[in-house]
Length: 106
Image (cartoon, rainbow, N blue to C red; front, side):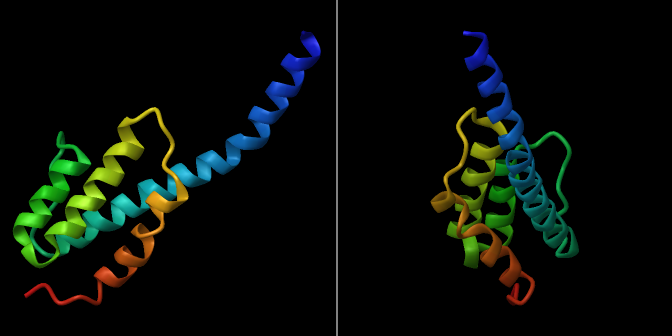
């Protein structure tokens, strides 16, 4: 039994940096979205959830309503769910956010 405890602790230590990197990436992506919104007159408001903020952006920029609502769901799951996001769920985030700066808002 003690041998299996050691191996499970070792596995946890090996996985931890990857999980932290993933978490920082999602936090960074949400901060990018917040900066983008602030530059366009929609700053993040303390006390609201990522989904609520994305709903504000969806209302302010209806052209991308579906994308903002989808991002909100992904960020909510990341920040509040005990389940990890799958790669398939995360795949659209970075390319969409990278392209966001280039998109016209009007």
